[in-house]
Image (cartoon, rainbow, N blue to C red; front, side, top):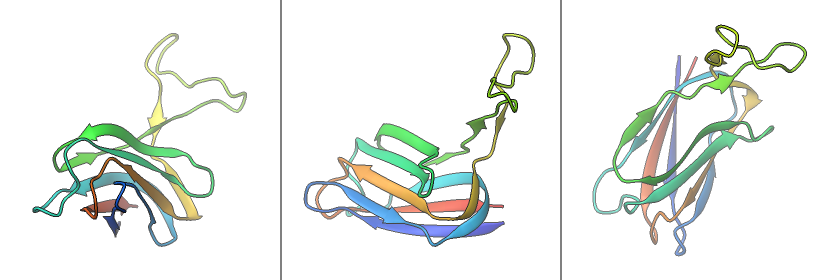
Length: 123
């Protein structure tokens, strides 16, 4: 398992776009750490994707505190049909895969010159 840390600092308008180093593996978890007076303001919005394909990892609005997420993506058959546990059942999900790709972190409404830290665990 690899621990990838991405420190993000917002511009005056509260926005930011940052990237992790290139990595390969499956995203196990994402941890947002909010710490101190320079932290993102309450109500910050996150959009976290893979850079190459823009596959979603974590999108959430109005985040106020440190939090952890364990993102999963829906799976499908070779015919593109959603894989389900049973007919009309719950979707089968799997970890988001990275193949020599970067994780893209986009922030909105984070406040002027505010900081946030993200830790990605990739196995």
